[in-house]
Image (cartoon, rainbow, N blue to C red; front, top):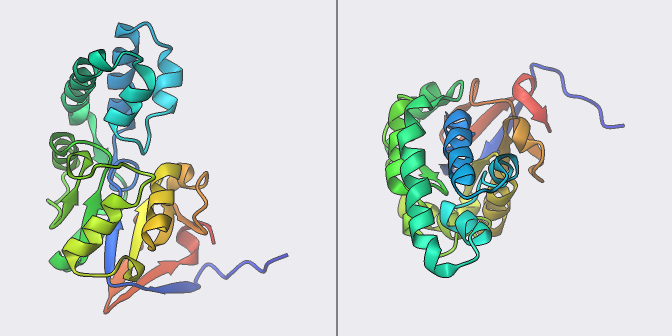
Length: 225
């Protein structure tokens, strides 16, 4: 059996850039997601619970492609869910510790990489009271969404760092796979993070520190290590 570290133990992870997923990592948008996708599903006589269970970490365009068989109907279906999600964005709140941690980081050290479209990402960040990212990569900026590594590779490039010198914070399986494929160190976040293959999972962003190329995590804040 692996010995459990003392709660006061601190783990140091070398990294130059920090790349954050948005939903479930920086912001809690679950209520809005469930509200929007449930309405969208009901409008199309689809089982709402099954639809809402499959959307996390995936671009709305990719979800629509899976659920709408007729390619000619997909543009209207995609426009509908994008509108519903933006309308529901006002219910978004901050994940504990997100504001304090982001405000502690130098401007050129962090980015947000999300499966949401740009308008939705900005609406949720604003509703949660979080700062505008110095680099924001959304579904509008990549050809291939998560689990493809495109978004995280692009974010690292724009920050000026190799992906291998970055840490990715993710709460979805698709997102964690994208971070690994990009070559980054992946840290899971929250209860959904436990379903990923991330070797380290943190409760939320409280207690995180970054200074001089080192991310510091306290054992007391970890769900898995």
